[in-house]
Image 1: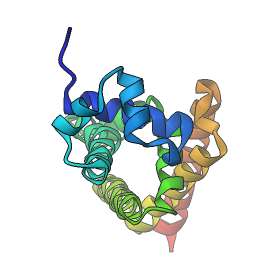
Image 2: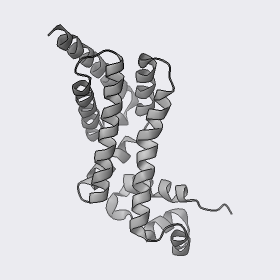
Image 3: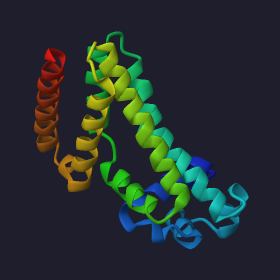
Length: 183
């Protein structure tokens, strides 16, 4: 029988969070999901609060830092943007929606959500600046706001719809950037 790692507990927790909401993040449900005892849970984590902090860090790494790292490996700004779009389309958007809901009720999740939002916007602004856009930060904020809205509305749940929306958003941002450049 394979040993259960801290990452296994985090993967299980994110699935529970996504499918059942933050209220379901209990030691009992986590143990049931992994078919492990409470002793196994407490072997890895001092208490539920410690676990929740690690869960948020794991989510931040998997759904923010890892996609940025993958995109950053590309040589050009255009390739980085394209890779980021590709990677982001494949993320667990329902999980982000659940974390955002949790962030309204749990201060620690709220802090993590703010940190993630800021990191994502910073990276988008960096991409826009590298492409020579004036108002790169404002473009990044608009782009990210549209992304969060699309997540909340469930537009990423259907690949074709997400691709069309992504293309339309890209075109709209280019038009806006060109209009700002003429000022």
